[in-house]
Length: 121
Image (cartoon, rainbow, N blue to C red; front, side, top):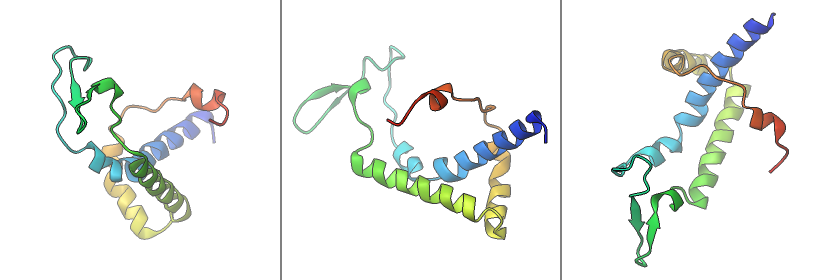
């Protein structure tokens, strides 16, 4: 297999794995809700007032707590694990085929140099 074929297959897999294993998770639940209006375009004019009356700039607001992050990451790991181990299952193949059209409309993936150059965090 030549390098272009490898890239094409990797791009297709990356998109469908992102769709099935990341996007269609609790991430969708976290994404639901009202998006604040910004007049500046950079959200520097948006603040959240918490129950203690603190006025927190939007750029400093955590939008996901530790428990939600833990649950989300476990769901993603479970889905990636399932994808790898059950890729030949006819039911999973049907799901892949159903979502492939949407996933293929996403931008072409690119190599993330930060992932290669970083050590463990």
